Amino acid sequence: MKRRGLLLVVSGPSGAGKGTICKELLSRRGDSITVSVSATTRSPRAGEVEGVNYFFLDKEKFVDMVAAGEFLEHAQVYDNFYGTPMKFVMDELVRGKNVLLEIDIQGAMQVREKYPEGVYIFVLPPSMKELKNRIIGRGSETAESLEKRFSSAFSEIDFIKKYDYYIINDKVDKATDTLTSIIDAESHRVVENIEELINEFKGERE
Amino acid sequence: MKRRGLLLVVSGPSGAGKGTICKELLSRRGDSITVSVSATTRSPRAGEVEGVNYFFLDKEKFVDMVAAGEFLEHAQVYDNFYGTPMKFVMDELVRGKNVLLEIDIQGAMQVREKYPEGVYIFVLPPSMKELKNRIIGRGSETAESLEKRFSSAFSEIDFIKKYDYYIINDKVDKATDTLTSIIDAESHRVVENIEELINEFKGERE
Image (tube, rainbow over all chains, first blue to last red; front, side):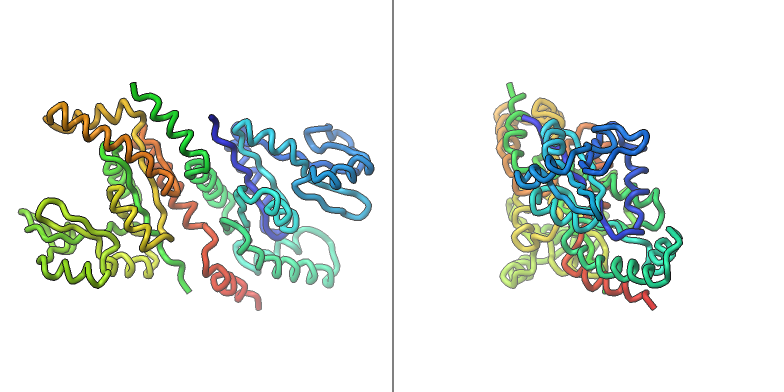
């Protein structure tokens, strides 16, 4: 009897810094965490490796998998499809590995429908002002498109209530400490199969 | 708008070492944690201070408080009553302080009925064999009474499924790390009043 791994869904508005936190988490805990690999219909770029950066699929295969319910979530971005294949994630969880999925809010909401047992973590910027600065800092966009991105991030924050935990990304180190605390706590949560685990524990009584 | 503190209920069979873990927790985090003070009808012993070690009450007052539902839990041990006054705990929680309640399993189950929002943590011994050793090590009891205590601890373990988290007390330091992780994680849980908290956060947008 084994304890199933945790599906760690790290999400939040763009500019909150979820990528930075996940990178720091992996540098600390890479050994015990598997990063979920997405599937995409776009062509591999130079240096990208099948099964490491992405699973590269043709559109027909992708659409078949969508129809068969084989994605935890999927989305279309311009002409390409992206998705999280369920099998890869489930296999790792059953092996007892924790799986990290860094994903936008729409994706996270899809995952939650299929796997509510996951741990849903919402990353917030330190302040709305800082979020604006970060969005501006990212690229040479027009004032209008910046305002649009900011106001979209602003309303995305309401989705926080669909999550289990929130982390305010003020300092990356501290935010990552909180993330590791969440992982450690969740690893000690009383789970459905606790009775079987306890019976094994009691089995020592001889 | 303030975030309410956490009621941390640390419980488990006798011999599991919950007292040792709580002591270590307080030595690390004493500043941010209030220890719940029990009420009792027994007489103060030398050096015991009202409101610090216990609230000392006469039996009439105690019984009135039980009738008025003013205890989170209470129990009779021989001729004396013991209980956890609700007001003291609630006042601290509303102030945003975390409150630690180290308590046996029967008491924890009573608290849970009145305050299910608490964080219920079950401390397990490293093994059943070690639990036996610890119970034996505690005092000069008869073989029969030892066997009774052990078998009671053994069946108490089934109550684990009524808890949120479990900690295996193998090494005190590591067990306390897990407890602090649970506190940090729970402090970042998305709570009922998250919308109000977020509106304040958004309020920065000017």
